[in-house]
Length: 196
Image (tube, rainbow, N blue to C red; front, top):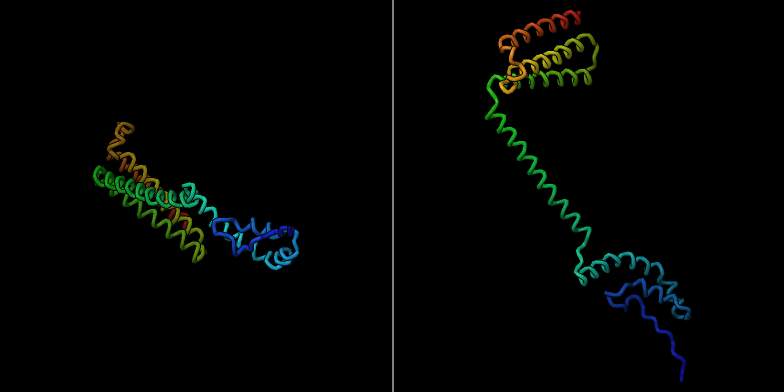
């Protein structure tokens, strides 16, 4: 009898469900024809094993009915983002509707004035950053007047809000407004003197 020769199939002849890296290691057998063949195909066999391993993993998951963890994580993130965005929109809409329905007109007017003061303060700061602050006293006086008026208006809003009647029983709305006017006069007196 003739001795049996080691038969090693080439990586191209392997079925697609078998890992090609097993064949590349089998092709490195000590027989002479296989050794010369492995020298010429070693780089290509490593490239195909790295590209086919994800495909093989997908095929194994299909056979064993295991879910793909990467696609599940991506799907859960993509589903969670719109849901949380919708929740945030619903919360903001409910807050706005509650504000419009339950807030008295006088408090809304004070809120509008506070928004105006906030806008003026931001514009002054942006102007100072872009154009420079050459008359620095003027910038400080204007910005201080805006911030101080915002604080005084917030104080008036808190004192005249009907929801805060328990905290300010002894203070009437007229007294709160008189304090607001007096504080505003003192604030603007100091700001005008600071400009010089």
